[in-house]
Image (tube, rainbow, N blue to C red):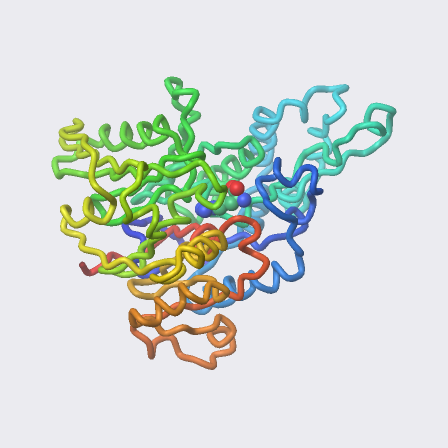
Length: 429
Ligand SMILES: NC(=[NH2+])NCCC[C@H](N)C(=O)O
C-alpha cells in the first residue's frame, strides 16, 4: 500500500477516491443445486464468464480510482502473527466447530500453520473436509469451513458512514465471516484510518439486529435512507439510530426508512430498487418507490441526541423533496411495460454505483433501463472502451459505464453491491 487513507464517505455520489473490491474466485462455483439456496444464490455461476465480466468492473474502476482487493488486504494484515491469531480465534468463535478438538470439522491448527497468503485464500475459498475417518467419509458436507460465496458483493458486510465503518450484522450465518474479515481489515491495515463500529460488540444488542450495506444509502451528509426488509430489521435500523443519537449533533439529521417486500429475492436490499445517480437524479423501481403501495416510508428526525419527530411519508421521493432534495426518477426497465420493469429489476437493473455525480456503472443487459438513462442525458459507454482507452471519460459530463452482466447478476446483485467505497470527495450541492 502506497499511501495513508482516511476513510470519508458522506454521499452516494461524491467523486470516488477509493473502493474495496473482491474478484470472485472458486468460492462462487463451489456449491451444488441442493445447497445453492443455503449459499443465497438462485443459480450456480460460471466462474470464467463471471471473472471476465468482473474484469470490466475492476478494470474500469482502476482507470478511475484507487482500488483495493479484499484478499490482498487480508493477506497483508495476516502477516502479523498476533493479528493472525486474533483473526483465527474470532473465526472459531463464530464457527465453534472449527476449534473443538476431536470434532469432525476441527481445523484450527491447520489454519494456524498457513502462510498469510494461503490463510487469506482459505478464509475466503473455504477448506475441504479431509475424509480420514468414517464420520468424515460419510459426511454430506464437502467443507470443514465453508466458502464465502457472496464476498464479491463487498457492499454488504461493512459500510462507510462518514469517517467510521459500520460492520454488517448479516442476516444469514453464511455471510458472518465476511463481516469479521472486513472489520479485521479496517482495524489492522496500517494504511487505513477508520474507526469500526460493530453491533455485536454492544452487550445490549437486540438479538434481532440485522444490518447489511445494500440497505444503507447516504443521500446527503444529513440524510440516510435505509431499507427495511429481509436483510435489515427495524432493530438494525434502531442500532444505527442509537449511534446517531449518541453523537448529540445540534443540526437535525434524518433517517428515511423504506419498507421492502420479502419476495421475490431480488428485493433483498434497498439498492436493488433505488440508487442515487446524480445531484438531481435517481434510479427507481417505480412500482415500489413511486406507485402507492402497502410498503411504508417512515421519516425519523433527530436533533441534540433526541428523536424529535417520527412519521409516515407518502413515498421516498416526496420525503426527500421536503428535505430540499428534489430528484428526478429514472425508471428501471423503462416507463411503458411493467413486464420489462420486473425483468430488469430482477437482473439488478436498478443497482447503479456512482463514481461521481452523474457518472455511474451498471449492467448493459438491461436495455430498457439503459434507454431511459440515455434519454436522460447519460452517455452509454461499454467498460471495454474505458479499459482500452477508446474513450476518454473526461469528455463526458454524464455517463453509464456498462458491464455485460449476463453471469454476475445471477449472484444476486449489481455494480453497487460489488463495491465498498471508502472515500469520496465532498459534493458541491
Ligand atoms: N447489496 C446487494 N444488493 N447485495 C446483493 C447480495 C446478493 C447475495 N447473493 C446475497 O444474497 O446476500
